[in-house]
Image 1 (cartoon, rainbow, N blue to C red):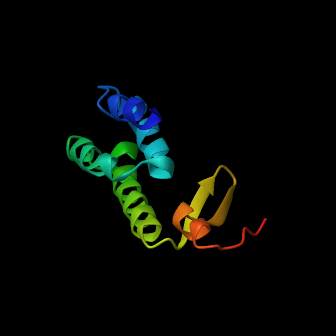
Image 2: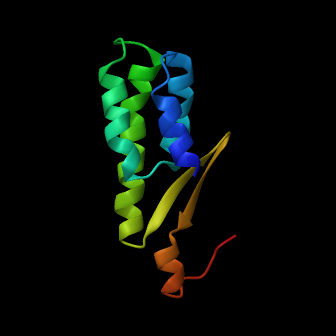
Length: 99
């Protein structure tokens, strides 16, 4: 699974590699990524990209999970654009897809 690979890269000793994993987990990580993100951020130097990006990544994962758990709209991120979609739970309730 992609998240497992990203969690492995998050433990990489090079902050640049770990930061790239943090950015990816921000977009697609599950709750399983929250504790490793916090742990890695605690080990980084203040003011570094990794330290600055870990908090927002945790918030994004938690927000996505909270929204998805209710079957409501979920914000998505794509390079250069954002989006709004419904989670699978909402589709199963008969919501219509807006394209």
